[in-house]
Length: 506
Image 1 (cartoon, one colour):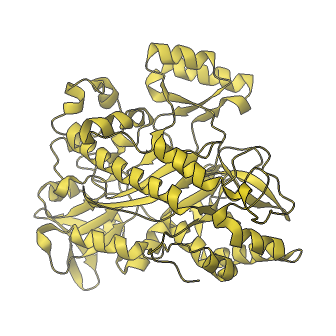
Image 2 (cartoon, rainbow, N blue to C red):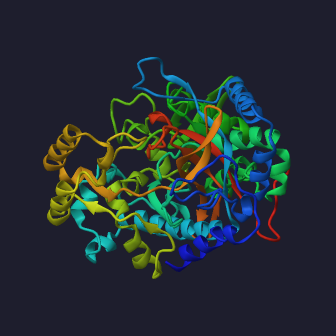
């Protein structure tokens, strides 16, 4: 792909210059985003590598521990429900930032804007005319068998055709430096609070390197999110009431819900705080009822309205869908977006881009085998030791088999699961993910990373991508699983500004 080859070239020219070499560090044959194969700084990493080489012994680990204490004091946590030692965890953080060149980021930004435009058109189509199905590009049973396809949302027409206002799309780079989309997260994507807090502590600890690297800012995300939510309000209200709807304190991302509500200056509410009257939404307050016009909901579709979805739910608001269909409240994201999260549907996104936009994808998918197809399933079962197998509806690093690292018994168990429910599984080649220097004890070693940028969409031609996003790092040596629930951590992501773009202040 042209854009990827251009990006790769921009990242690999450092070996032909006199840039500094990162001392006592080896890339070990992997594509490293900070240094080239011979440990020489890439062009945008010169200030960082210079700093790392100049720090006295022990100083880097001292700063790492200072940041960890700061994050602990701020209470930056997430919940791991399967952990027997306690559910509340501090998000692990690594002090060495990931740096993305302006050229690489330009391709990523264009590709993400293209992708969300196509996904919004797909969602509008699949709940209404179903043209893409009728024209034979996606089999009907792929959609109708998807657990996240909400038949209750048929006929919905969100304003401006925007179903997904807030997206987190997971990207990886391979051993050639090319960028691929790993998956789309269109329901309630989490993690942006860590992006903002990581940046705050990094600027304090690496102010000179940060300033010299011409890093683009991320701190305007809450303001942009709030303004987008305000403009979503029905009937162009001059002063709409916006709230963040959370499942409550036991949700894994509750810290983020409260953080974003505080940053935007809006109320954080639970389902029990809201009520529906005459198809309008009201919030219970100490001063009486107050009408709610926009809800940034962090409650999953199934639990959103017990009148329509799960009747057992105590997390949602009875009658909310009636108010939404009546046009009296705006929801971000619209119910039903989860069908585009499905890992089987993901395989068809390149065709969606061609079908709805008449364009070639700027960002490629990872090649994907659908176990529902007989030919694909036979190949997957015969090559389980080479592939990564994923359950279609799982997230957080659960339901994954990494074939080359799995035991014979684990592969046999997954083979049986595939035979029992082929629709639920996809497989992909095991990519050699790019790496970034990472603190391991008191030394630096390469660890694999992915990236989740965040996208705000108000309309087909009004899409904004946060410059950077959440870099997740697999802290275990050799591991490809970056999810925090599976032992991963996070890094600050420095996107280098092009000439004329705003640069963040340290």
